[in-house]
Amino acid sequence: MSETYASSEYQSEPGLYEIRIKGHLDDQWSDWFGGWTITLEDNGDTLLTGPVVDQAALHGLLKKVRDLGLSLVSVRPLEPGSSTTLPLQGLRGTGQADRSDVK
Image 1: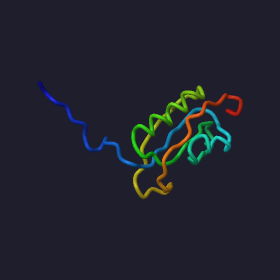
Image 2: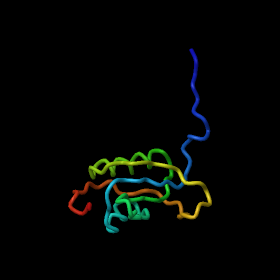
Image 3: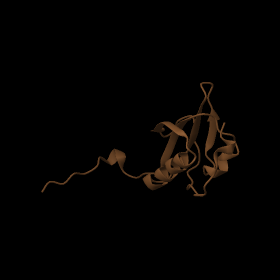
Image 4: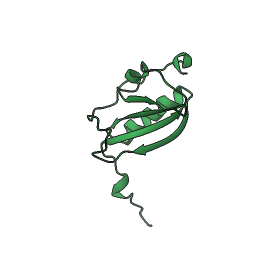
């Protein structure tokens, strides 16, 4: 029987991520997204930028995007020391929301 091991590059490590979604979110959603930075792009997309303590936290955040019915465009890790440095903190809150505040 063969065993497959994941590369250490994909192990659960704290880091910063950028999540791009289609459409603009109001700043009030920052608390719902665990204090992540919300940047509205000229092309109509929203960038969510913030810390992820592990893969479970990343999946929890993606679940929130899904629960809002938003279209996920991309998810990418940011390089350590990038210009968007934020303090590492856990993601909290798993509440549901309606789409009334999504533009």
